[in-house]
Image 1 (spheres, one colour):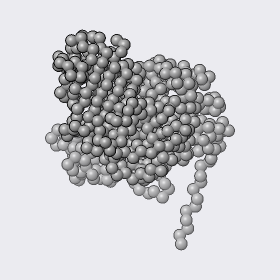
Image 2 (tube, rainbow, N blue to C red):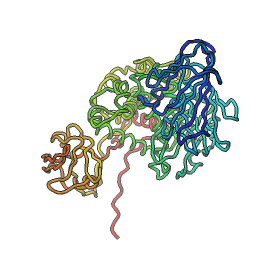
Image 3 (cartoon, helix red, strand yellow):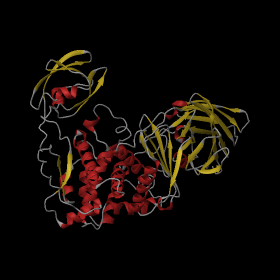
Image 4 (cartoon, rainbow, N blue to C red):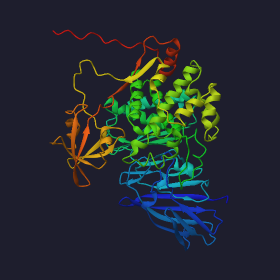
Length: 598
């Protein structure tokens, strides 16, 4: 079927509200029927979505002005066109787009954002056909994309195949665009959206530091150019990686204070690191893609969780996290894991395989039966890194494994087979790692964070209350709630907690504690008045009927955990710490004496 070519036209000037016209010219066909298909998912977002819902009015004809051709809706996201042996077809349709998220087709009077999977269907059997995309946009709009430009007017771009098209967002409107050149590689920052408390030169500087630290960690870069798409919004959605760009949708107030800005830097570091891990170092099943169904792999924990770990390490190496802040955030990840009962239910490999129906389809029982493969994958990667640094006496690390994966798999475009990751890590480090992988990747063994921390001269434990904090310990029930019309509605009940043992259920509406009225906003504060061990009469409505539940408050989980220096670490532990954190190990700081009253 050589010689098939596809050309799309998007007319952003002929809007009807948020709906506009598309045309799709297919040439070089030699078949009696052809199917055009809307993808059911986009790479990097592992769940099936009803992208086809905004499509309407699909018609086909022979050539640009030929007779109409029969079209059958042969599936929810598929149309079969009877070509009558015509080699060239024109397909017209409209799409509604009004959702500015990371995987989006969004059209407003000021803006056009195209993720091709949502509005540009593919020709079944011809995913490898070369593609052009022509845009009809207002003359004062600027177009930003990493696709190759064919001509400036009208703006027209080329993709070598459909995979490259889906992997190359198109943004048009009035973005603020600046270019930085770390390692001599042009990286554009394209900021779209009104408002924003950012300082553009600070963003240039800090993104440049992230790029520099990432390239130094991996060893080199495959890029000729790259774009950071940043969309400012009141509905934050996160980010989505692409081979030569990433698209983020963030609150317009993401840049102050420092804690919010660190979240933004973490998002950009994570998505940028994906240009290596996922986009090039990848499981075999993740490219070429089947856009019509789930693409299962047991390695999403490495693709996402390990990326998340490395992206934090990049921020440490870039000087954007201090050593103490880096360790504080690792401890925060560990707290999230330890407070989720579902951490004991599924291995990382199984969590990876069922992400399509689990992580992206969370419901009231999720925390009791599952855990994020991002969070657990992040922490297992940290522990594996410390294990390798300790056992090789800092001659190797997880970075060593990353670098060989890049050289042998990422650069040549060779996918990893299922189960191959462990063998690569063992070969490159010279270690037997089967016990580690059996426990923490293929199994559900509880992670002993303190054991791994000691490899780096640290301990891991709950953070004690300050000596001058005399506030009483509040009671704990082990449920999550939200305020609904003033009511306290239970959303989740954690396993093996007082509320779970007492039979409290999601959907219950708590109205009183020991006869005293509570509301959705007052409930946490009210509970502080009932310390651990206090019997409670919980008055609640369950499916509209009043009930009384007897429960005894428990002790809440630790508010914070921390990594702290050990007393008298070994020389090896100090070397592990320095190779990991990038600065010399230091003993814990002794609190100074309290100030004398004047």
